[in-house]
Length: 326
Ligand SMILES: NC(=O)c1ccc[n+]([C@@H]2O[C@H](COP(=O)([O-])OP(=O)(O)OC[C@H]3O[C@@H](n4cnc5c(N)ncnc54)[C@H](O)[C@@H]3O)[C@@H](O)[C@H]2O)c1
Image: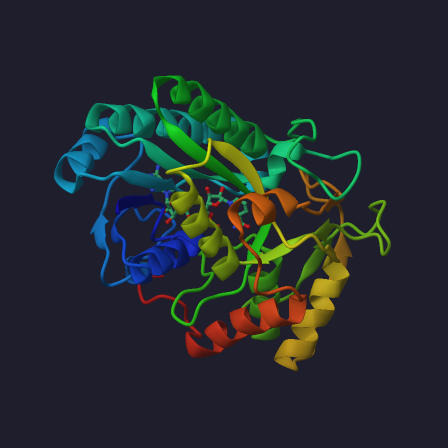
């Protein structure tokens, strides 16, 4: 299939592009490289440097690419920043998705797999969370992603086939591509920075949450397993109805457990301080991912945290300075 991957130069998009290319799809990446890296784009994929807010650039990409399907990952995604600057998130995530859907309609592309998030559930009343739980985001990031899901549902009346994948916490790396951002907000790469002396200290955001050890609990899912979910979703789009799926392992790890895992895997000492809570962070997010297992036959290959942290650490050791353009 001819597939356009928006955000394919970013962390998850680079691995999605890698798996799509290696599964025999013809792939182009649409990314303005604001957070992504040219070197993270698989060599067999074409990079189209463009902004989702630039409708003519999208049009010309579809004109030349003749895409049948889109995997839409490009977005603003830092929760804390969404609390500070909500309009940026509605603009890039919602307006950008409208532009993309318009271009798809104009050029006859009818299939889309969308990167949604566990943040749409907000502070859930119970865990594990299944797809029927109430949608009540507690930050503009989650709200903007839910808006996109609704835009896809509306577009289905005009023939769009769509799958929204609500990922939980992505982590890990493939052999080639890993997580590398200029301003990192994710706990595992931040802990790596701390053990490697790239940052002076590590501060845990809050230890007074209603969880077993007082720190936030998250369901970590390996980026290769997320990428594989896209392969399954694209294949399913031909025959199955449009759908929303959680993508997680179904097991939660607390921030303190993540710290212990990084200590074990890296074999390095790691001191940390405890600070106040970060705004917009729910206490615990754990997926019930039985729907995607049952309907698409997807199974996560990485189940325990140490194996996920190890793959990220190995990538970090292979590429100690990240991507050349960073
Ligand atoms: N990382 C996670 O744990 C996680 C969890 C749930 C959902 N998601 C979602 O998955 C997707 C990918 O996340 P990621 O962690 O790889 O983020 P990332 O920032 O590494 O990748 C996003 C990519 O989109 C590009 N981009 C952003 N705005 C753009 C625009 N206006 N036009 C063109 N390109 C643009 C960036 O340059 C970047 O390469 C996002 O939609 C995010 O919301 C991520």
